[in-house]
Amino acid sequence: MRIIIQKFGGTSVATQQRRELVSNKIESAIEKGYSPVVVVSAIGRKGDPYATDTLLSLINNNETHLEKREMDLLMSCGEIISAVVMAETLQRRGIKSSVLTGGQAGIITDDNFNDATILRVDTKRIIDLLNKGIVPIVTGFQGMTSEGDITTLGRGGSDVTGAVLGEALRAEAIEIYTDVDGIMTADPRIVPEAKVIEKISYNEVFQLADQGAKVIHPKAVEYAMRGNVPLWIKNTMSDAQGTMITSAKHNEGRIVTGITHMSNRSQISVKCKDTGNEKDLFEILAGCGISIDLINVFPEYRVFTIDGKDSLRVNNILKDLGLEYSIINNCSKIALIGNGMRGVPGVMAKILKTLVQNNIKVLQTADSHTTIWCLVSEEDTIKAINALHKEFSL
Ligand code: ADP
Ligand code: MG
Image (cartoon, rainbow, N blue to C red; front, side, top):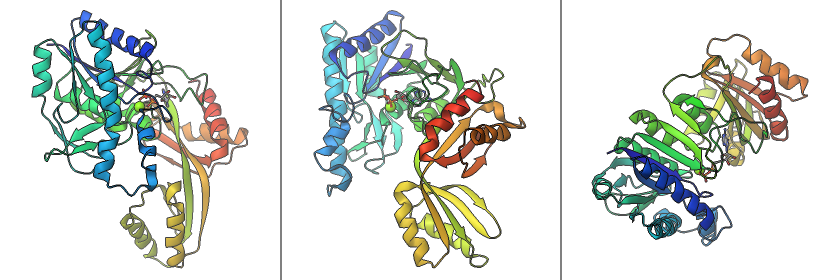
């Protein structure tokens, strides 16, 4: 059996016209001799009647008093509705299909409600359906504890469902269908000239996703990589070839493969009181569940960044500790990613020169083998990304 996973995002299943396009993709996989396993997200985006964010607004979103266990029951409804509507579209065409919730599809998780971790996948039920020539339509973004409680997998979790099933079923490929023609050199909403990348490595996509490119969930990349299943990003609304993601390096002389960013970061600079104190500070912050990055340690002070939503808490912690510090809010962390930058001299120099020439103040930088980060003011983000995109001829 040649199993293929086909995951369709919220915009792909948003209207009946689009669901017909989804059916075309499924039908064409069957015609090519594949046994597709379909995964769907909830219909549409915030504001659309059955989107997950809309369901959450019924219980006041973040300010809710509802237990996370019950929140997960509510949040799992969007995908159930979407899968049933999709089944109707397929069955009307004479394609046999059967809807499975995450639990019914054998996705067993821990009980960390709202952000559960998948412990194992029991594929028996999916295999039984495939053997009978029935297309399983699995509700994305959800699993079940061994006690039978419904859990959800965190934002973008339908990608994770698709990838974990691809790994467990040893699929020939995992196809993630969305509203763009593939992984692009930058978010096309920020850089209109961004180009589709034909081939890219798991590692580079993981970095892009992890650093803010929401085109795919980073965990999904990890599962595909672990199972060594080729991962494709394709457009439901076009016949473009899409992006193929494998372990091959594919860097074809390019230094930077893509640019992404994370907004709402805050930069903290803390003056050292005496030696040893700062170690305590990092421990205290970790103890409060505050993650920090872009950490620069100097003899006299420490500089690091945090998620802007933690800014007020960190401010209070530093004040209570009696430390001298300053905070710059509304920063944006830009990441340039590419396997090809490993060991190439002058990349950082080129980035800094480009930003300076565009009158963009660089607040901080950091680098690893395959990523260079620049912290800039939020209002400079679009200008900075476009300038860098042009400079590296992406
Ligand atoms: P879906 O609902 O199908 O899961 P998402 O909104 O999660 O779709 O992801 C698709 C969106 O990701 C695109 O519309 C695009 O704006 C955004 N995006 C961000 N960075 C990139 C990138 N590097 N390449 C392609 N798309 C990107
Ligand atoms: Mg998505």
